[in-house]
Image 1 (tube, each protein chain N blue to C red):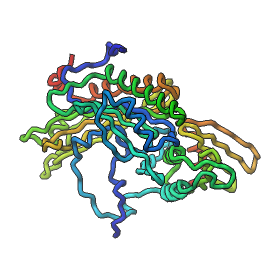
Image 2: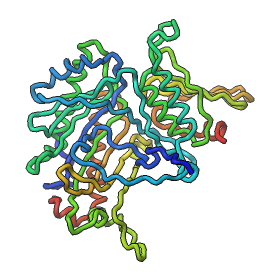
Image 3: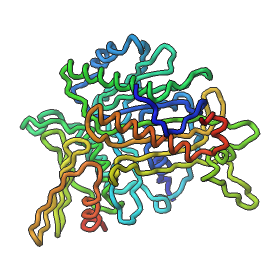
Image 4: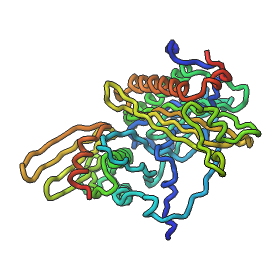
Length: 161
Length: 277
């Protein structure tokens, strides 16, 4: 038995209203959290932890980090990339490599035996998805904004245990 | 001023305690803390008081058909830049209206401070919001910081329903949402001591998902010690176009969903108390 629960496991899954300041005049009534094991309650997927660690690393980069004049990775691009992963990934989907782009965006890469997938996030609501099927040689590109069903189907069928 | 939609339910004494209209935009990386002073100068005559708060994180409503799979829980994800630029609150003399500004968000809030404070109504608030966003955009441009590119919008109504001394919070939630929520009675345990609810709905346009409506009801207390049920409704999503018109369109749509959902979810008996017209 371990006290493995992150507080977030017991927080509402939907994010609350960011701009509301009601907490200045009200307080929610707290509920004591039980000390139970991770296996019985679920926890953050492994890809979530690895993405967050990598994102924090990228935010340490300075302008011109590659000596080619590249911009610092932007928080909004990283936040949106995380939102894409949350929507498109199953809990057991393989973690992507997270690569900074010269324009401050970020690229997510999955390399598999059958297919490679890349997602370029330039800004929020702007994701370019590219896939290459190794057997057929077929390359596909989609421009996605907030609906990620095609990407989800691909990742769940090819990169999920 | 845009007129109120005629088919929208209306209440003369709604239990609303706070309303927030907001937009999230692509981060203005050039905006540093000293620029917030230039921005305040634009609003200081109507909002002479200030507060400083940590920045709120970015939120996105995204969608995917998960093929019947269980959605992955959204974990809290907070990225910290090396030197976070704060969120500043510009507050009016009555402390009931405020603007919130940070490098990727702009909000206009109304909040009830005293019992006599009247909700100024959405039609007035959206005008203040539009004026504020245009002024913010002007300052950002004049300072050479870039442009505001909206990526999400949000409208929130927070309602407070008092819990009388002789009632439990669960009884009040049942009184409030009784058409949809009946607390289970469990033999010798009786009814639950309290309850909290969270509902999520997808907002669609032309069959495509564009946002979500979140509804929560939970026990809380005011800082004066009064017990209440806090019923919060938030509509959040992507504007149809990344400009002021797109933002206003979404806020209007979100407000309609919030008000209609409030009317549908709450009990007609309560509507009489709130003066439904």
